[in-house]
Length: 185
Image (cartoon, rainbow, N blue to C red):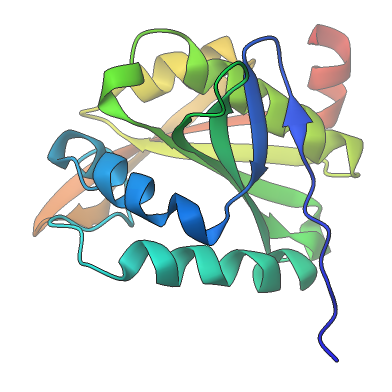
């Protein structure tokens, strides 16, 4: 008999962050498949292949159950409309996690990414993490503003750290410690 994993749910003023469900797949493909969204992330392919959203969603419960990651569907609180994703990739041994997020292009500029990131950071620290960090492509300063507004500090630049669509990309690194969150949250 398979173990049922109860996925956490987080609420903010405007958002509900919940586990993804199979019915979210078409919306994930539509939003994440946008070239502008894919261009800002390390792992989202473009074009976005059929079946990829279903495959990705199927991995979440197992990864959460094994303590490797937690990936939230970011939805509007009033309508339940899926607008993006926010996740923590965990390294339990070192009590740290990497936060990642994407928001569909029609929802850019409304503060949703910052609101989701703050909720996920609070979730991580409430579960005993000591450090949460993030990277973003240097050519995507909007992600840096999200991380700063979420309380993170710029820690440096990893030069030509990633390859995106065949091109070396510099990555900006941000981080926050549990002790800083407690003082500034």
